[in-house]
Length: 151
Image (tube, rainbow, N blue to C red; front, side, top):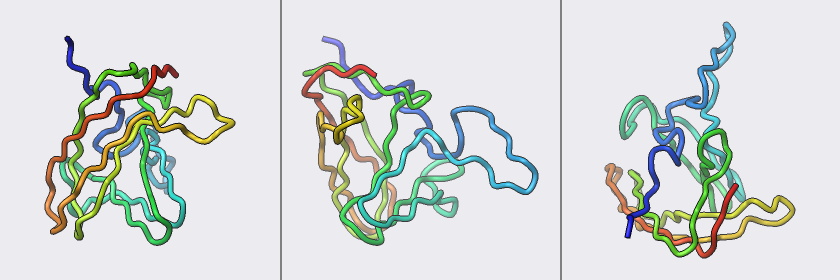
C-alpha cells in the first residue's frame, strides 16, 4: 500500500506569497499581481488580505475575515488552475497551519467542479477545530474522495 498525500506539486502557491504562477512584472505605478493560484469564495462579504504583519512563514499569510454570510473560503486547483486528479477510496492526508483569535471550525474539502453547469459536488470533507488565542498551530486532516476525478 502506498500512502497518498497532498504533495507540493499538487497545491500551488501554498504560502500565499504572491503570483507564483509566473514571473509577471508590474507596470510602473501599479500594484504587484495578486496570487492567481488561489480562488476566493464567499456567500456574503469577506475580506481576503495578505497578512504581512504576522505571517506563519515567509513574506505573507492569507487572512480571511468574514464580515457577513456563513462562509468564506479559498480554493486551489493546482498548477495553472488545471485541477487535481483524485482517486476514489484512497485517503489523502494533509495539514494546514492556522491561527484565529477565537476558536472556530475550519472545513477542508475536495469538490468536483468538472460540470460547470451545476453546483460543485463535495467528494470529501473534514472539520478541523482551530484553537483560539491567536497562535499559529499545525492541524492535520485526511480526506477520502468518494469517486475518481480527473480535470
